[in-house]
Every structure is written in structure tokens, then in C-alpha cells.
Length: 183
Image (cartoon, rainbow, N blue to C red):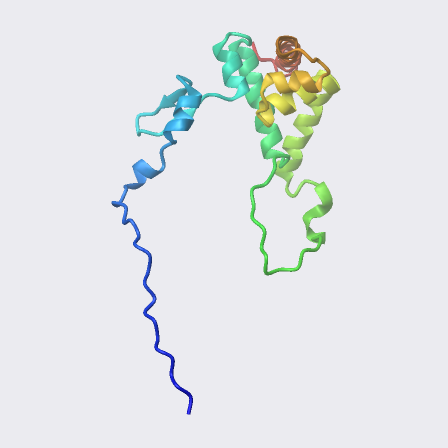
């Protein structure tokens, strides 16, 4: 006869029960994020907070670019995004086999809408050239700081890198304004 071992009661660790926080409070940016953004955010009538600290927004606030160039950059980013060229957010499913999926069209547009936006983006890239499109893809679409874009262009000094990237961005945006008849 086996002796039954006494069962020990599993004690749960004391948990701190946080007070229920309403969604409006949870959906706000953290204090650190607001501090990093500084004064570059807008609060809408409904309380929605829009952060305005992307490189494009900063360039407009510093008057590095004109409102017309800003509108052209937004249009460029619109065609880039709706052309499906952005990185997709997703998570890894650990329960499935990791293999290529042949139904993803291997980079081809999935709809006529995507094909339209990609065609407009190709026209823009032809108008502004390789370097201009690289600068706009990095700074406007992927929101890399202008200093990093300047470093990628080959400048080693931070001030020169920023100035070179800002100048290339302005030249490219002027080309887009001319192409799209903005301003």
C-alpha cells in the first residue's frame, strides 16, 4: 500500500488588482511617448491624439519644406501605402509549418487598386530619380530620421548628413509638385 503524500495547497502569489481603467485612459500614449514628441501632437475634438513627430512633420514645422511639398510627400506616401509596398504587421503562428506560400502572387499587385497605386508610384520614381525615390522612401514612407538618410547617402558628419538629405528631399518633392501639378 502506497502512502498518499499530503497535498500541498498551491498558494497563488498575491496579485495587485489594478483599478479598472477606462478605454480612453488605456488608449492614450504613455508619458514617455508624449515627452519624446514634445509639442508635436494634436488633440482632436473627440480627444484623439495625433502624433506629429515624423521626419516629414518635423521638416514642415521647421519650414524646411513648403506646404505644397508636404502635400506632394503625403500623396507619394499614399501611393506607396495603398500600392501594398509597406511592411505588413503580423505574428508568427507556431502551430503551422513554415513554408512558402505560392498564393501570394510573388510581389504582384493583388487588385486593380494596388496596380493603379503602383503605377502612379512608378511614374513618380521615374520623375524624381533613384536617389530622390530612396530619400522619399526612407524619410517619408518608412519615417527614418533625415540624419540616417544622409548617412546612407554617404555623409559622415551629422549636420552635413541632415542637410544633404533635406536638400535631396526638397529637390525630389519639387519634382513631384511639378509632376502632379501641386502649387
